[in-house]
Length: 141
Image (cartoon, rainbow, N blue to C red; front, side):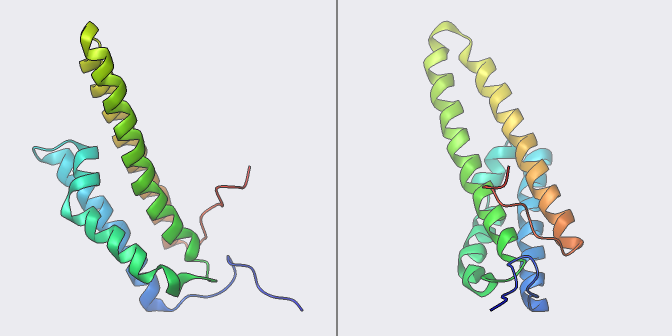
């Protein structure tokens, strides 16, 4: 029996709209950090737009199963959790290096780099969503 792959199954327009809203909320979180008092990454991880976006991802994720949108929901969720994990690692390493005064620089550079990475992930995903393309699998080379 020939079954379509995840990337070829169509998704309801309402679910496509939810994926756009999630990217928009993440982008808003990043923008608030860029132009506000918080850092880009801090606003992305702890600001209300991204928290709402991740909740939406988990609530609507099962509806996206088997469609080309499933990869976007996974991409959005992974972006958030990987950013949090790497932020914790950068903070821990920087705290250890603070003893030799280098910690402030490593924290600043690390958080800046993670902010750029988060902006890239949200932009790349949103552009592919606009073109109705699935995201690449993390297992794919």
